[in-house]
Length: 384
Ligand SMILES: Cc1cc2nc3c(=O)[nH]c(=O)nc-3n(C[C@H](O)[C@H](O)[C@H](O)COP(=O)(O)OP(=O)(O)OC[C@H]3O[C@@H](n4cnc5c(N)ncnc54)[C@H](O)[C@@H]3O)c2cc1C
Image (cartoon, rainbow, N blue to C red; front, side):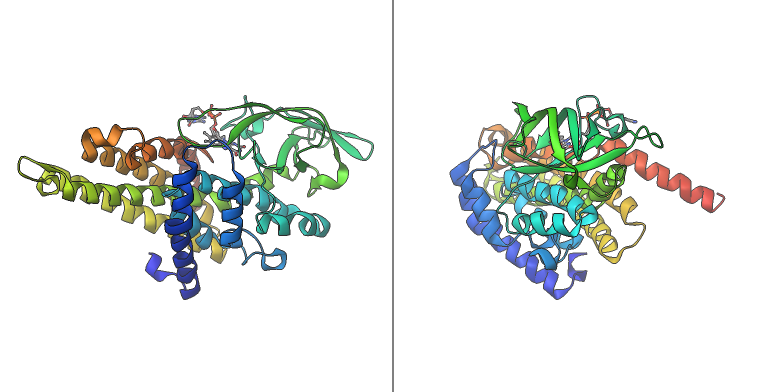
């Protein structure tokens, strides 16, 4: 499928791969397991030019491109997962401003995000509102020319290191008591506090926020009151398939490491790759990877063309690629035997890093609900 990409997309892919395999790999080695975004990583990502496809040309990007977002994540995720998280959050926190921001908001925030000078977050999930986003309880109530926000946000990636974010909260009106709106918030605004950092099974900057009497100027409202839910869903529609791309990158790294190991590890007098039980695992991984690549880039191409079916394909791609990558990495650990579960082994690290991808931006079960809903709609239209 990637061979169907345009020449300039392939050039971008080569640029991302060169960065990932060179500078980023060296940095990963130096930094090891991290739970924030050290300055060295922030600077490296900023200087690499990798944020380009997340932002319009008018604000310092290359133009928003789902294909290139996927290429970037695929290249970096298998090398250094924390870099992938930072990249993805720049998209999740930046795209709502692209979608719904005023000219002044775009001019104020987007160039600094595109250059990587500022880091951002996407604050949607709450302790009681995960898959069920609409159960959100955080409120933003008007007070003169400000809104006063109270509530809690949970599992917010980049939350410790980012200096700004897009925060979603309920803004009940007489017409729409369940309305949700989006706000730009900045670190340093009194009332937006990291409540605690959350330790995950693998490197990840992730926190829970407590929001207490946070006074946000009306000018920080993103789009009209009540438009926040749509903005959040449209943002996830752009980024969801790229979770599949990150998984794909991790699976490729696992296959490469397994191939290398299986060709060198000798048991019963021959390299284990010569045992059919091992070579079949490698073949299964290759098939899973090829299918994931096809689905991810099909979804991305559809998104860039404005095809209305892109959202469906995005869910399909996310579901398949994350589940397939998990299978591949599990097989990779098995191929490595004991060496695969030693702390610090590439496949041991991937085994921990892949797991959250089946959960965030909509769990596998939620993707199935979305896909099934599309099928039902189609069946009704066709009167099946
Ligand atoms: C590493 C990581 C990073 C994250 N980063 C962010 C971030 O930056 N910003 C942000 O806003 N959020 C973020 N999240 C939150 C993430 O989007 C949620 O964890 C996810 O949507 C699932 O919500 P939950 O954890 O509350 O699980 P729950 O919604 O409680 O789900 C628990 C289980 O029930 C299943 N389930 C729930 N409802 C249904 C249903 N209707 N039918 C069938 N099964 C169902 C789920 O699939 C899951 O298996 C992150 C999460 C993780 C793990």
